[in-house]
Length: 79
Image (cartoon, rainbow, N blue to C red; front, side, top):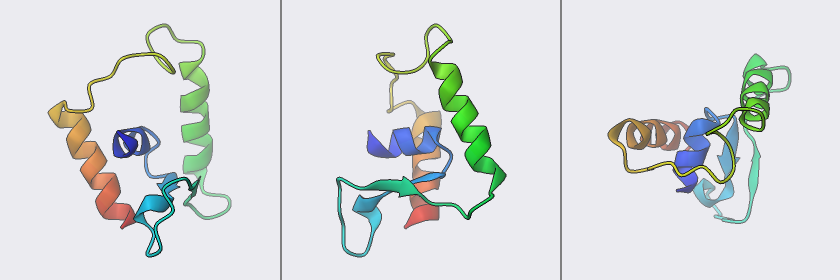
């Protein structure tokens, strides 16, 4: 489930569980200062608050092939 959420965040956020010394409670921004993807993803998350059927409380199936593939891509990028 964590990787599915990270895939939605397009690799902008990294999970500490993937670090060489894992810290599963840690999430942090994993892009360089000034990277335009931060603004894009922040705007994406903001729209979830105002778009019916998106954001917190929406049931998403993380086992859908498309979502699993996206999660695997982010994991490969960040590990």
